[in-house]
Length: 271
Image 1 (spheres, one colour):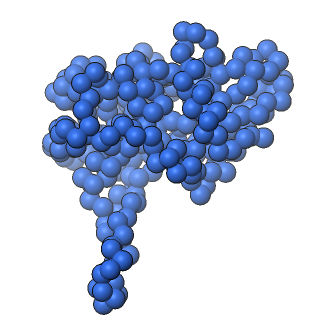
Image 2 (tube, helix red, strand yellow):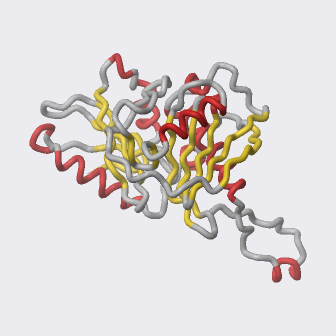
């Protein structure tokens, strides 16, 4: 949960009676995570996928579809649906995912979402069901069986969002990793060790990241019969980090920008 600190010049009496942090509303969560997802997408995938008329500071309507423990923020004009899984009652965000709907309006995105209900969600994706991002280095994780459709829509409404400046994600700017970074390190180590018989010993590079990033790109050098490339890891609903897909550094994948960003923002080397 994100908290807002109070100004230091508030009186001592006010501080004594004030709560340590203000409880976020679901609208706060949607606006924050949607803004962060847009910045993440622009940094890692390239701003091209957000449409050519993205203008920071302008207002965009978000179609919000809320279910129990999960909310979908539909941003049709920028070709994005942000899937936010949270814990009640304080709306503490557990995972954030991004999928790319067809169309350019919230109406089209909502129609697509309702057709796909039960086929998209954090950590699952049916083969051939989701439009691949057109941004540089974009990938779609391996298809995985999805759970049954959620019990139902609790609310469906529109929320305004002021489009953020497309600055790098906070983790990149501040050069930080989450307190539980060992969870991702362990998942990456397991993946690297599973390839030793083919690739030989490799040193993977993990960039600075947040535990609510939609994906983390991990750079793997060439070795044995394995080319250089990136492996994607995403956070599952139970907070485990899962391997998604390996993308070889070949011209058609256009990975040069992603690789350069991992190299210049490496936080951890594994093993």
